[in-house]
Length: 270
Ligand SMILES: Nc1ncnc2c1ncn2[C@@H]1O[C@H](COP(=O)(O)OP(=O)(O)OP(=O)(O)O)[C@@H](O)[C@H]1O
Ligand SMILES: [Mg+2]
Image 1 (cartoon, rainbow, N blue to C red):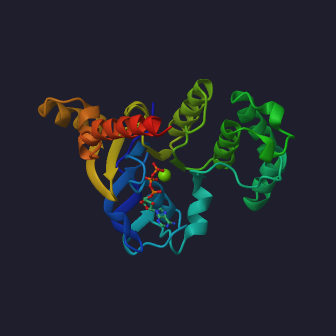
Image 2: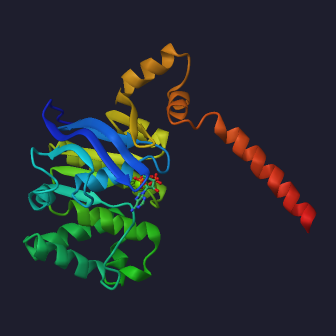
Image 3: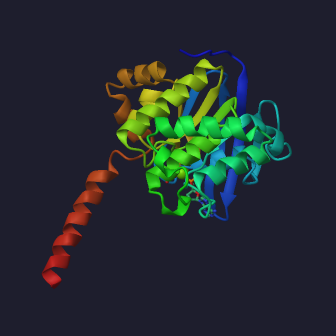
């Protein structure tokens, strides 16, 4: 269940970010509406993380317009951060802290009640079956457990909008289920989500609308049923269309063949 409305919470128009000659984001436009999960779906290097970093004011765009809750990420990033929970691509930072220290730090910078935050954080840790790491140095935790901490750190202040860059990366099956429930509860609470993934099935399972992104451009956008309908008309599955739009369909057999050939040659050398 969610509370979808027509209200736009993220507006992106003709957004561009170039790193010297690399057009990482090359004229992208999309809206994320209140109450929905919008997925940015695209292969490695498509421009998903760059788009997300631009939205959070972590990078400066070369051109285009962006708004989050009507605010400008370049000038009003502090107000935006109060209302947004962000899970970055690389898990956690603050490696010399324990989770407990981290949550205290969050309570202090966000000016939230420390006891309330610790109690909430413990509940989430328990759901993720990671409460035993509460007092353990973050540096010593596994990749997946660091990712859980990052997720918890992003939701402790009850943000209205979650911006999640590959949030399921590193999570085991049980934790994926917990994460999905966290997103569901967030939606039931009137929240919205922008989500990035390179995995078609995850986008299909979790998103209300999907923007397919390739080489910095939006090459397809719509509700899942709309994208499926378009695929049907072409006599293909959604996955076929995704692979075609992102130019992954023809090349993979070639690549595998080349790899096999060079592997064979390598053996001969020995
Ligand atoms: N700081 C940077 N300097 C130079 N090039 C960059 C930088 N950050 C990203 N790029 C380039 O921009 C392009 C888009 O990268 P981005 O990280 O946004 O892709 P992505 O869709 O998030 O990929 P992935 O699925 O691998 O996370 C890539 O070609 C990448 O090499
Ligand atoms: Mg990325």
